[in-house]
Length: 129
Image 1 (cartoon, rainbow, N blue to C red):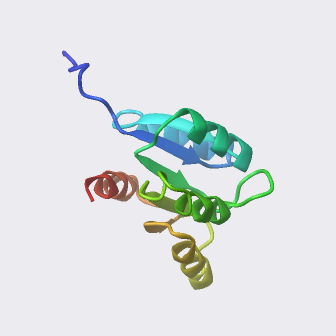
Image 2: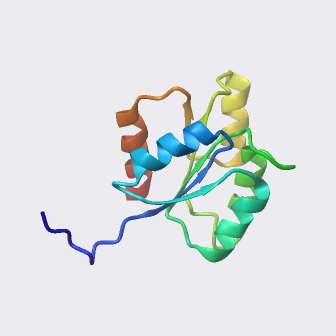
């Protein structure tokens, strides 16, 4: 089988603090995405400084001082970064969590566990908009 090396995969930053979830997401998404991983506000900003991402998969609970919603709000308020789609994937399933996520600027809100095909369709879908 030949691969077209000229086709660049979209870059995704997975912001997730759980190691098992990180491992699964990386394995699951690497076929369609160039995957980068972070687990805290510090590693989030280090990644952003070095790479231009096409989409961000954001958990609410993270290591460090800031949660995923704070990071999303800051990202959406930063010129040059405000158009990066953010898909929230979280275990926080209450309506207030959903409302807070949209107030922070997420484009899509998904709760864990999510079916694999729905996650993939969602991520690929936000890239087309």
